[in-house]
Image 1 (tube, rainbow, N blue to C red):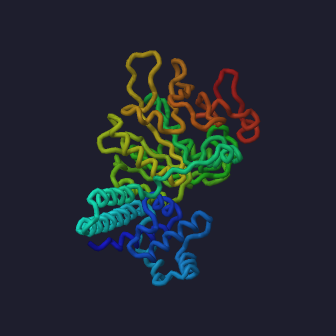
Image 2 (image 1 turned 90 degrees about the vertical axis):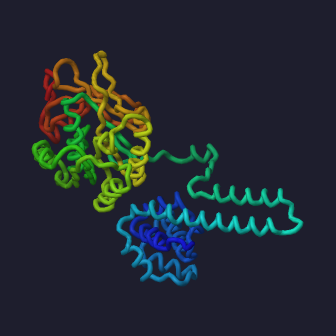
Image 3 (image 1 turned 180 degrees about the horizontal axis):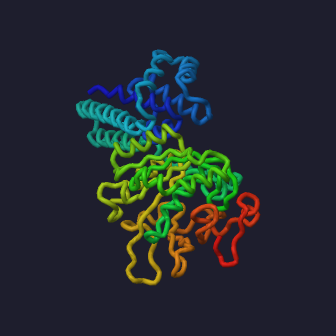
Length: 412
């Protein structure tokens, strides 16, 4: 049985499109899994280049191949592989094919060896069986990305803590947040406000100026018309106070999309490839699976799909829905459908009305923050330059950038 050489070409092409693809492929296959040794060498070289922070392009890889005296793979071949690959995200699909082909070859070789040894005179059957089992065990355990390494505690403590902030004090790269809340209170408005302010160069919590953040929105519930209606005022004020064009956000409005299927997830990865955001606002999460989330089995593939996006260094901000009120004085605002969603994100916030009115909202943490020392507020108040204003906006920021003060009555 011949291997799928096209799959090997697509893996190399995806790795040339994005260094992230090299990292993903390293978790699935080893350079020795390639049927063509030249392609395996190209993959090994690209892995080393990624670790060293070197640019991975057809020319640079071809140069390295020549330096290592690897023949039969020129710049024109590498360029054609890259051109034929639709998206860097396809690397996972094709890397699995390459790995499966390698395992099948290893199994056939083990079977042939077993047949040869079983026919040899004088070779004890127990030895034949032992060697066969050892060979099968080696095939099973030779899985990239599964080995464990350890360090001395002293080595770990010697590293100076270094936060990989996307937004200092709020989000580190790879953070995940789920926001729930009472119906009609304004959680969707707060989520949209955050997206627009991040892109405008405004910290949506402290209202200080920050470096603008690239934002992608995938809204699987609302239409473009609803966005136009809801955000014009926020965009106008952000344009006045911010450092960047607040309309510089990429928004994809879509109906229910099943991201547990390859077609749905690939479509989102292609958007990420195209627009290269730092923060992805996506949801509501219950509309990203075929039949909603009713148990942990429903949630598991959704979490896996979302983590494939998070693994690209994205911050994920997601809207979730909590169970309906059941007459209890304190309503549970954790995401409905699966307990697995409660322990998964770095931040889990629920917006609850403060008192009988709706001029303020308490932020209930249904999941303890994994990242300490962040600036997330305890409550939101309506008023000020934007629909929602956090309780921890510094008075000097109000005076310096916005020219408004907190009133005696608690509003803005």
